[in-house]
Image (cartoon, rainbow over all chains, first blue to last red; front, side, top):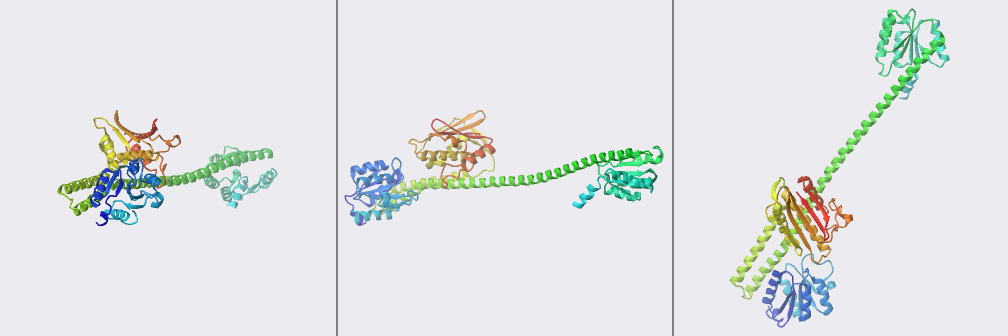
Length: 131
Length: 405
């Protein structure tokens, strides 16, 4: 609860192609982090576009998406800002054995999403080394 | 064996002689010997008959010694000869050829030649040699019959071993068919499980989020009756959907023991709905007639064939990264048959492969993805069990599968 206050004025870009999932997670983020500005995108290309426009502090993304997937998007984002912090939501076989760092993600949060883990990651970023 | 043969063929050309003690008894063997013919003098009719049974080329017997007893024993000995044998018997007559004794002798089962006395040596020798030649011809027959018998035995042995090999092959075939059936069942189960997990993944994810959101909103005092009702109702929808998936698979993907009458259009639509999420991203168009197209057969196996083809199409569209993947399904009735065509725009099957797509174990996918069994079993099932046909051809855009039942 305490950490959730430190994100006042911060922004997060959430990229997810599945509409219902996107709405539910966005609702959770908005409820848990009242000061956080949450932007959304429905695929990697849109996400890249939003990132360029808004330069959010944190990116949260699904991996398997049409048009451009999460891995491709992370690469592009890192090309724009090598320090960008990207958290990937991953199902069992989304990625091979490559480590997160090699792909461009800062960390993984497994699916089905457990908010406890997700919020811990977000808290760590905003409250600790992230900022 | 060897000594037997020697005995056999050694006696083949000998002349057995039964004469009363006389000058003839001495001179005949000598005369024959001079032309290279071996002879054996027999003392009694019994001895003669015994020697006949051992083997002889010609028998020379004096009429004097042809007692009824002698004739009887000769008859017995000759009766024991094989079918090809007609032993030349030269009878040296004492009186004329008309005596009763000679008449009886003529009835013996041999080649009886009466020789009137006196006979010139040359004539006599000529008779013996003629008889020997005739005997040799009989031996030729004997030898050929033996060869035939051997050949026949060989053939029988070969036939027996071929029969055995055939039985083994039939068994191998049967085993192979069973193995294929089992593998196909396993592969189908594997795909079914894959499908179910695919179908369930999204609903499960969303259910997890809905529940967690209930907790979050309650903690922030933002939970309302309305939001609670909405969450519950949506959750139940998702659960019903997941339950339906199981029912679909149970109903449609278990093997059927009995034939039934079904509507092809309905099965096509069900197959598409079963695949549901799996076909996401692919534009699927269905052209169907107004009236039902009914056929008789195994509905579930038919559905599985359809699912197989759909999944293949989806896979190849994905693999080749087709920009606007499309599958066009047409259901029609042509005469008394139903025709379903499934056409994709994936670019087609290469010429060198198109003849093999229905072969068992043929797959273009890696070992962890394709078993190569699906299309083979589908074709077998439709053509053997439902008297239909399953074929494929290339169109300008891609491949088109055609099922006729």
